[in-house]
Length: 516
Image: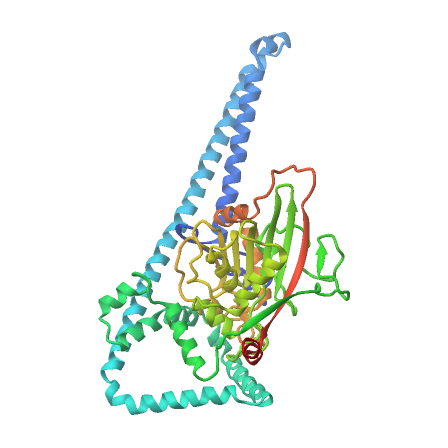
């Protein structure tokens, strides 16, 4: 998409692509935007034809005779006919070209779908083969495997037992190592490999168990779906629990003051003057919703929109705050990430649900969920629970591809092809979500201080604005469903009230003491 905003050296020149929505289609937004423009040209031409027809019908021969203008009638009729023919040609050709552009999109999409299916099948077979090979030679390698597991367990235990300053040093060394390889980590080929690799872990484990390949395919993602990414995440939780990592806790939630405010107020009308970037009107687009995702100490923002038909809510959820494997005070951590992917009772999900209850959201009130990174995983998980009247989901860079959000809930998901975080959520389990993709960081761009520059929130904000501007039909249909409110022309505008919530984990020893 040329002519857009600059993104670090021209990244916006790489167009977004849109896929899903129940249609096998992948195409650049430029194609959709051009097709949309051609639709408008055809509509304007048809409007011109109707205008000429009305003019021709309104002027009668009797009127021309009375005005002594019968002599120019023949010339006028000829001019009208010629103009009408030109407009008919324009309308027909514009409509035909628009159809051709959309047909091209479907061809691209069919190819992409075929390649993705082949990749999934190959990943499954390779994973099962590796697992079977490992089990076959396992007796020979058993001493080494035991030693490696012991060393790994000892290392994990040592990491969790480090003093804070030592843990900080290890973290800094890890960040330095990752920083030196950030170009590789932002390679779309690696991101694709990771996306499929995480889906093959379960196949490898079944291979180790010597489960026949045909049974592995039947049980796996493209079969009955009885094993998959959630199974692998559950095993990771079990392994982490053995060394004190990835262990869930209770969580407490409280209202928080709005960002930038100094007073104790926790609820802010939409017209209040705050030094907060997010807009305070009713959100309508993807960028509107992205701008409301919290970035301070509060992890959740909930907007209550009071209309003549009753209240509806918009929930905005922040991304991961603490990347450590050991659960401490912050519920937006790796423990919640892995637990949510496993389909377990993640503390961050519980925190959002409690914040929703405090804000007045119940099973009957309409709500739209928006989240970035882990927040998107939470948003999709809440929508998939069936406990709320979710009218739409917007996710940005979320590892949520395997979450089973019902097909009737509109879902717009923004992913960067060079972002590893959404790839950690595996391949998409459904084609009902409308997935918008863009490469955020170009090969020719200078390295940044960020290990995963494509996962930066401001990059996703840019993608959100590009998505709104594209005018793609499936995105617009999803937004129309999310924004459905009272009939247009209502006398009183809706009132928006925003509330922020902050959550923290309850230490395990405190929980055990209270229970005891």
